[in-house]
Image (cartoon, rainbow, N blue to C red; front, side, top):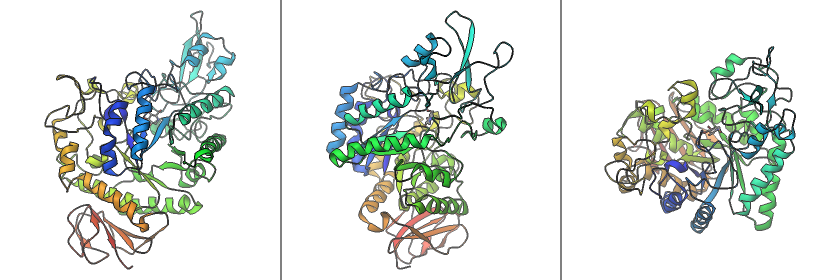
Length: 530
Ligand code: NOJ
């Protein structure tokens, strides 16, 4: 299990209201206690923070907001000592408009080698005033922005699949892959255990940059379906090459270097191509995260993954939460604020289901506390560029990024070491007091204990290791499967109680679970002979 650390919201050691690398180091013992195998750190590189670090101005340094390279080295040493692996977030599809190469491109003429590292093109229409094609950006608006040439006249356009501050690299230009080789080696030489790869189905675009066949559909979907802008076959060569770089390091010291891709593609079969034996070891299978709370929907997702991904010998990588999505507690139910509502019960059950599945699991910080989404942040504190670009609150991602509560009754709940009056970069609601880590650790009924116990059993029980699963016959609304030689996991998606598939007291349950009964919105594990 890898724990996703969203650095700016984890723990602030410098007292400016923003989490940092020293804060992550201070939080490592907490994560060790929880039982994580590793952490994935969200981007901490120098960046103007238009998309919270997913706009990288320098791939080989630390933004002073988060620390410096010396602090990074201290974090690595501390993590190694605790046996926690560290994955960095690498962003190869785009950089920041403040990256020196993009600045150089702006200062260079059309057709120059500096422009060839990005996608610059002349506009359409008599004055070139129309974008070069009809592509949409993921965060709203057209995927092209027009620049002023050095003489001040309106000039070429550049491509950005996200915000205008995130120009897309042109991976067909040899300097781009060569640069990323240097970046990989820079961090591998510093001891990292691998990378989470941002937008891993991106990078290459159709070489002619033709119009999308269905721009309306592209605009509607958050995960763009434009088949000319995403999921091009050439990207697989990059992952094969990156894997070979990682293997080179592994060959030196026997330590595995892990590549996990953020892969959003139309089907599990397409997904499986990214985790072929010589490509990425893992790729997030987001279908579980997007499934509604429904037994049939969950069963379909798990079956497809087992058949199309695990069936080819690859690992399935499960995820229920991340820094881009509404938290499960809220997504699965009414926005419960006291941790006892339906959403919370379902989120707990989903966690037990995920931890019982074969493959890797990723947990997003705060998930282990049962934090709900903060749904009522005022407009003036929202920082997500999606809000700025679309004016719509519907998709904003700030609500899952509110800084963690660690202790105490009032904000900042131990999040910042700052003097009184220092506010966390996003306001924490009063009810976060209920979720603070000190309370969670002290209460054996908390989410934290469920995750901790589940992770411990996952490590101890051979049935929960590699291998397949076998579905059991169950009444509608209930799912149950067997792992190995008899670990049974059952989930009751309905609200009414069902008969448990195994008699006796469960090994672990997401809620009160008397022998023989599986209450509604509850999951449990048993050792049974089925
Ligand atoms: C996916 C990341 O998870 C998200 O936070 C980011 O905004 C986009 N990629 C663009 O880098």
